[in-house]
Image: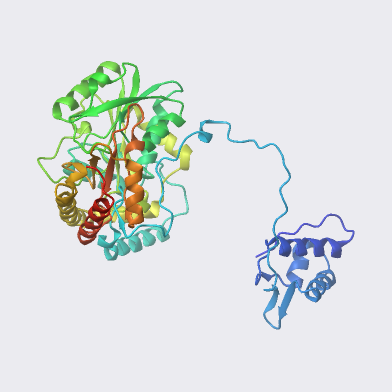
Length: 479
């Protein structure tokens, strides 16, 4: 590659070249072992004589900055190490000048390599159970499709094959009737939430969210200038009677309330739909892990009950495949579809087409359905193992809220226990626990622990919970 050098005028060419190359080596921009262009190529690149470049290279080699290997080229000497950079001059910083400076992190991130031996983090899946051999064949297919196509930008709404696969899947598994044209592919559920908010919210608008609820959604609404109203939930889900009358969007997780896990009752779903119809509000339904239901009959989604076009349905493959895939989707009400498509185009034009093509084949060839059936059986066993401990030896300290669906559950702490102290005590025993207090915003938090079982096997659940019981018993935790 050409090295970036600049020659000003025609005076002192050797000196200019020498100072720039030396500075690049000292500053570390030219790393030890980096191969430089030949003296002939560099002379041509800069429009100077080869004798000038030869003289400069010889001087740098004499000073130990460069090394030459016969027949191979000229390289930055390995002995050269980067010097500490000089302090940057103090100057006014433009800053972001916006709400971004004050927003908290959406969710805490685990540092690489810092995962505990028994990690009950929520929202993750077990990649060891994913059929990567099938996925590899789908990716190979996608590569062949890419090789045959032109190098052009694609439809912001997504590849037709994936939108078709998603619409068929939702019609079969979630009773959501849609054409493939109704589906807009996004970078996970978070972008779908953000896109819907961008096309609906004006600064100062009221957005109602569940309390406790999903922090990344709450923060996304705040970032767009919305006034976020925190609405309590009870055993039947969101309390519709507590909704502010001027809410423009109501964000809900009716199939598996996040984080507490209850499903919204049918009476409450009907009441919420009627409320939205009267108020002209948008219901933003996040069906983030409704595929995994272990008790009772499947609950109808709000979208499947919507007859007047007030529900935007959001889904993701983060919980069914793995989060790194970064593929989600939204089915907005028809009047908003064009605006959402344009917002997607402005934001990132479109999601990765190769991944979309591979996922479409994975779904249409039946691999996705087979994977879901396998994971449903595995997650059911993990849920049973976890509840056996929470309802058994650990019931002295926890009251488990056993949801009918999902890949996590919440256990309330019994009286006079400190959530953060318990998390720290568990961490000392290499057990990863995660509290729910940070998921409350408008009311006093009720301490509890979110136990994710998507990324931890049955054997480790038993071992980790037994170790947790020993740690709590040995510490004389109340009661």
